[in-house]
Image (cartoon, rainbow, N blue to C red; front, side, top):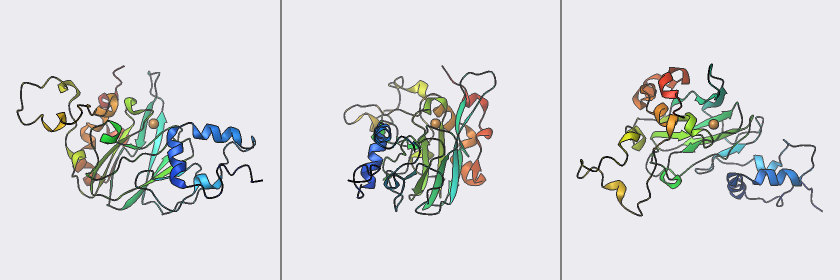
Length: 255
Ligand SMILES: [Cu+2]
């Protein structure tokens, strides 16, 4: 009889595991099937791997898991109370970061229940990562976890946290130069659907295919990413841009 912590045998494929994590419910299922004592002691197969996958990155459910590569930078996922507001602010610190192509960034979950998710058409969103970059995302991770991703392709990467996007939980990494679709200004939400009169050639490229509309960053994620403090060239100049540099108006919640 196998050790009951072996969920699917010792050869459990890492990609399948991470896909299962993405589905969200797998962890709960696993947890109930294992010894009740170690709720946070996950099977070794689930927290280790030997690469940073171009889609799934590398997930470590606990801070002391050995990374497959030494990260070059760190970004923390934070939650902080806002005076006079019931809803706290959710942010990455730094919110803007300049890296070299090929650098690996460690996203540390200083607080629980965040993701790092690319703005990518595969997710129904406007493309805000360089051409050819796959639709990458971390799973939803708990506090104390970390996630690694290697930014191989030169250009601007906009990303967000799945659970907290509308609260402004979004960030921007510039790998090398401020180029690619993410370097373009964000579409103005007000202009959506209104602009049929102008631009004979301007509006064509998006309306092909099945007509499924790709959505821009929603609510505060749009205003945070549109804030001048996060201008891609400025990120390159400064190296890093703190959440505190972003204007309060950009963090306001329209709901
Ligand atoms: Cu979040």
